[in-house]
Amino acid sequence: RSNAARWMGDVGGALVRAGLLAWADAGGGGMDGRKIGIVGIGFSGSWPEWLEGMTAGDVAGEWRVKQPLWLLECLPNLPAAQLAVEIGAKGPVETLRPRPSAGEEARQRVQRWLARGIERVLIVEATAGGAKAVVWCAEEKI
Image (tube, rainbow, N blue to C red; front, side, top):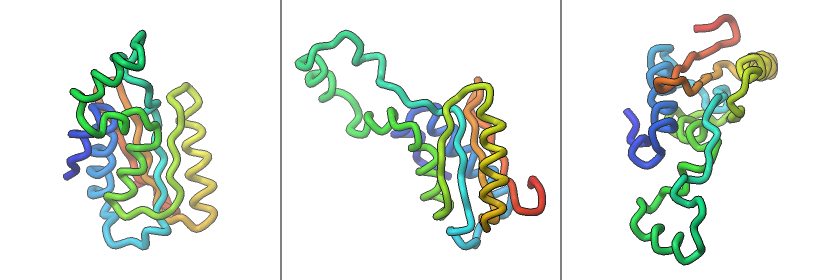
């Protein structure tokens, strides 16, 4: 179970939790981390709305009342990177922008990585209600 949702925001936390559940269901523990890759889809990261239209002085004042790690919510690859840390993945970790072709791009990456010796790839994707995840292996989708 991850505590990432506390400091990563709703979408990032949902991606990490979905990935951890899929990884556990697939029995991925104990693998060589260099043989594990992660593809994240749909966490775009963006500047918080509270920054819009503010002067530098306003931002400095608001900054003091925000959680210390608020900036991490803005980094697009953070959920996939956090997931890599939590499952011990040391292979490729990428995040794709949310767009209609992202699913096909993810499948192409998985095929390429599996052909290059990565044994399992965890794909996590943001959805309207949270996130979903699936684990692919060299032989078949798990």
